[in-house]
Figure 1 (tube, rainbow, N blue to C red):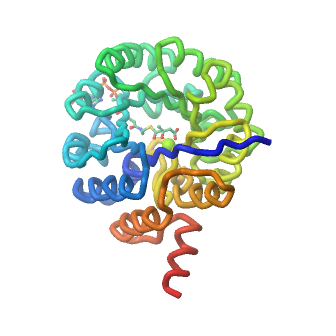
Figure 2 (cartoon, rainbow, N blue to C red):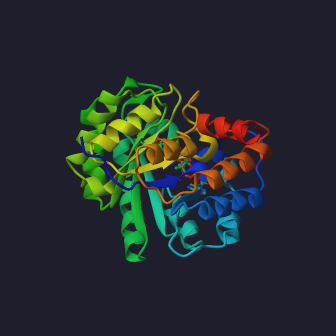
Length: 302
Ligand code: HMG
Ligand code: MG
């Protein structure tokens, strides 16, 4: 078993996490969260999404949040763009990377972005071309790679097909998402293997929601395959408004603790990350959804 010696985490909390909050979170709080994450050592942060405010009102302050972030050298700021309208709006905010997001399940594609998988690829095609022409990196997210809230189990062949389509239109990096956290390690390995038919190991990341408590195990099996990039969410924030019952991404704190405990570097300071998670959890009036944060916060109180 050979594990990567260094792992890159993308904190998606400000986007994936806060897109799902019922109570409005002020832009100033989102900006402060991004600042705390970059100060904790995160080198990529998914800040917001340029989607329809009718669909996801939580992200309607996208431009304001992007404008308020004091950028740090060496940090990549990414945003979601589902179509040209979103890309054109995002361009004014100068993201370093945009994310097009498709699904391996037809039903989820319809519910999430109101079109079929094939139509979504046609919408992404000009977005990818425009981003690359503007020197902006392009990541693709593949939802429901192991299970779908509407269709149930998703076969690896679906992932194979979607990853191939993403590769065809020029998506540079691909994320394998377990949107509703139903995956178990062997299923996740199969979804990764299907993706690796089209992408190099250095261009693949894992994005695991932790609804069923499997995300760390799914992270570990991916690490064993050589995957070294993961999306995680500070304080375990998150979910998807179009995936009922799905909880947050695996907590960044839990993944950092596991990796550091295995001697794998992340460049992240766990204590500062826990402070960032405590900050946003206090605003949301709840405890951080990270076992590590809970344990370490109670230890701090002695
Ligand atoms: P639509 O209704 O089919 O779009 O929505 P349309 O092109 O027909 O336009 C309808 C209206 O939306 C028009 O406004 C457009 O101007 C507006 P109206 O004339 O009615 O006033 N519109 C937009 N406004 C702002 N920004 C835009 C935009 N596009 C159209 N970009 C659309 C299609 C994709 C826009 C919609 O379905 C949508 O916004 N969906 C977003 C869903 C979403 O954000 N989901 C969560 C993120 S994905 C996720 O969490 C999964 C991930 O974490 C991985 C995983 O875990 O699986 C990434
Ligand atoms: Mg997600």
